[in-house]
Amino acid sequence: MPLTRKAYRAAILHSIADPAEVGIEASYEYFEDGLLVVDGGKISALGHASDLLPTLPADIEIEHYQDALITPGFIDTHIHLPQTGMVGSYGEQLLDWLNTYTFPCESQFGDKAHADEVADIFIKELLRNGTTTALVFGSVHPQSVNSFFEAAEKLDLRMIAGKVMMDRNAPDYLVDTAESSYVESKALIERWHGKGRLHYAVTPRFAPTSTPEQLTLAGQLLTEYPDLYMQTHISENLKEIEWVKELFPERKGYLDVYDHYQLLGERSVFAHGVHLCDDECARLAETGSAISFCPTSNLFLGSGLFNLPMAEKHKLNVGLGTDVGGGTSFSLLQTLNEAYKVMQLQGARLSPFKSLYLATLGGARALRLEDRIGNLQPGSDADFLVLDYHATPLLSYRLKQSNNIAETLFVLMTLGDDRTVQQTYAAGALVHQR
Ligand code: GUN
Ligand code: ZN
Image (cartoon, protein in one colour):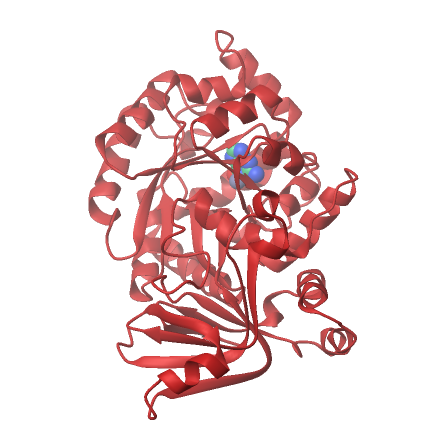
C-alpha cells in the first residue's frame, strides 16, 4: 500500500445521497476540474483543483487525466464466483438452469488448483470492470472462499464472501449437512472475518436447498459473531416461490421463512426480490435488510421486473448486483444499462444520478459500509475509477455532443462497459490499468 500522498486531477463525480430522498440536484457533487488527494490508502481531500492545489506541497505527485471522469469504485452486491465459467448458458429459467448448468459447474471447486485459477480470473474481471467491492457467493466448498480471500487479500481489496450452505434438493455431490455447514462456515469466519478489508457472509443458498436445521444454524452463526453478513436469494422466480410454499407450508410466505430463522437484519442482503409484496418490502425495511437488484439476470433468466419505485416507497436499501452467471456481465455500467430498460418496461424512469447512486453509495449503504466506501468523502478508502471518455470511437463521438454531466453520465452507462474503465484504484494502489 502506498503510504505517500498523491493527487489525481480530472473531472470528478460522486453520490452523496439517494436522489429518492433529497432530489437529484442534492444527491451528487461534481467538480469539472477536480482534485482527489490520497494519503496512505485513504482519501484525504476532494474539491476543485483551483481551491486545493495551493494547499498542497510543491513536490506532491499529481496524475492529470484529460477527458476522463473519476468516480468511486463500483459495488456489486450480488455475484457468484463459481459461475464465472458458465455465464451465458442457454435456454432455461431458474430451477432448470440451476440443475442443468449451475450445479455441475460449481461441483469443481473442491479442487484447489481449479478454485485458485477461477478466483484469479474472477478478481481480474471485477477490477477490469471497475468493481472494487463485491458481496460474493462461493460454492459449497470452503476452498472456493479460501482461494477468493487469498487473492483479494494480496491486493488489499474490500470484499465480502461466504461458503454456500445447501443440505437438500441438490445433487449428492454438492450438498453439505447442517452440522458440516456450520463447522466449515465457522472456520472460515475465524480465519477471514475482519482480516484486513475482508468480511464474511453467512450464505444459505436459498430456502429450498436448506433444511430447517441448517437455517437454524445459519441464524445461530449470526448471533455468535458481530458484524457478520448474511446473503441469500428471495422471490426471484414464480415456480421457486411456489416451491418454497410447498416446503414451508407453516410460514406466511417466502420472506417469513427467513424471518422465522432470524436471518433478517442490517447486514442481510437478499438477491432479486422481483416478486415481493408490499408487506414483505415493509418488513425488509423495518429490519434494515437490503435487496440486491440484478437486472441482467432477471431479464436473462426471464424472472421478471424488479419494482424499484415500490422499494423506494418503503425506504428499503437497494444495491445493484450482476448475479454472474445468471447475470450476463461483470460490468455495473452494463447492468445499469439493463436497469434503465427494466424501469422503462414498467413506465418508470431511472435517472443517471440514481443509477450512479445504486452502483456506488446505495451499494455501500446496503452493506453498511458507507463510512468507508461508496463515495469520495475524505476519510473513505481510496477505491476509485478513471473512466475514459474516448474508450471507443462511438463513445468518443457521442460524448462530443453531450451538453452536461447528466447526459455524459447517462451515455457512459448506456454505451460503457469494461473498455470504459481506464484505471481502477483500491486502497490508493493501481490494481487495473486498461
Ligand atoms: N437461487 C438459488 N441459487 C441461485 C443462483 O445460483 N443464481 C440465481 N440467480 N438464483 C439462485
Ligand atoms: Zn444469485
